[in-house]
Image (cartoon, rainbow, N blue to C red):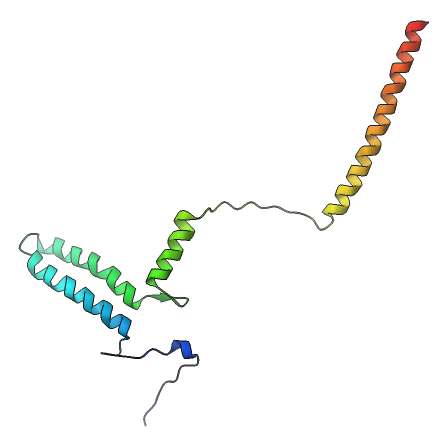
Length: 138
């Protein structure tokens, strides 16, 4: 019996080209092969075979990532850009501030209380000055 997979979301549908690969994957694979195969064949003349194979892997890996990597509907370029902006460029300092719900009420109450205390303190100081003056005159 023939079975056809139908994606639940229309955004998930991708047209397949060769070997069940999307157009993006085919292009990136083709570019990687076009660069790496000649590099491996002709690079053996100038470097050791181990070194050439590592160079080929280092060149092919980002190219294949660009074709096959997808995270949260972001392709590799978009993900790399977001990751760099968040981790390397963006400021990561976070300051925790706990402001209680009753902050405004408490602030008003404390300011009234402070005003009363300063008035009392001023009155006490005035009384002391008067007493000192009266003691000096006697």
